[in-house]
Image (cartoon, rainbow, N blue to C red; front, side, top):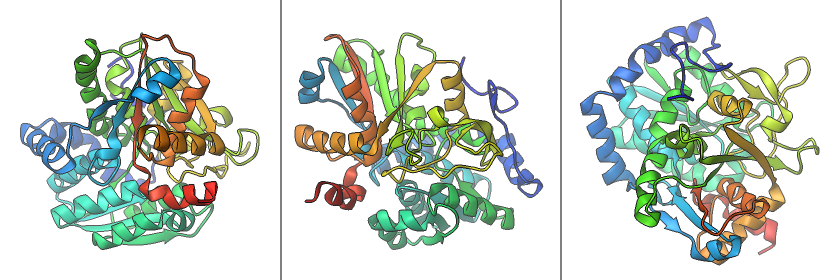
Length: 393
């Protein structure tokens, strides 16, 4: 792939593995073995069987007729919200649990913001009978309480992160500390295309099923496999990378990644990484992140628990820097209104994360023949309390 990772674990200027010495054996073990394992026919067969019969794939590509009329183009939703557990996160969780089993790991740790990755990880650990510990910021635990309950019901231990902003960044820090303390028997299932190489590449490969299916489904709907536009929300960026993956080399397809502007990019309460950030190292990889002049991470903010991350995955940083994809941002208010609009126009309550991508439609102009695909990365059940408080229902 033209935009893929090189043999040193970099996408252009971004990527690599900036890790403590104690984590080197874990990450090196993954680097040496992950491609052989995931390309093994037995692995592929088990992975594909679970995607079909457990997750419920392929997820539909839905032609949103009322949206199409409103925005003057053919609007399609890639329905990752219909997956088992309610989001795209299950694709990667299944891939990594199968990988961990083949590496002989007996314990799984994970981080989560919106809780969907935590639920997906707890789900596959229950499926495989493996111990599961999920780290989650205290603030996220409060605003995503239904997902905390789901994780506990699935048998996972949920450990609160009480430092810093008490959100996703801090949960990731706690998970990394755990991994350093338990390097032999534990596998860390990172939920996004972030972290030290090979995680960004590995997670992107597991999520690439999204765009692989989309190409085939577009042919059924439109007679051609390439749309004019592909949109997805981006925090760390796993749903976006899965949605973009098989379109990257098709230069005529315009890729639009939508970040969380929070209360406004200049408000001091934002997670618009590409607008506010610059190059540095975060959670084991060189990327673009929000930081002070002396390199301290700036606390991100978004009403969406899954998008308030102070950086983006290194492949996204590369796509942004070379202008292969357009990175834009949407405010809390714009996203919340878009979520309500989708609910009332299409009968689909989207996650607030996905609502950011939907909100971007308001800022775009289309030709009537344009085919536009939006990744509906998750369902809005987990966000009902936030929606209800926001709209005063």
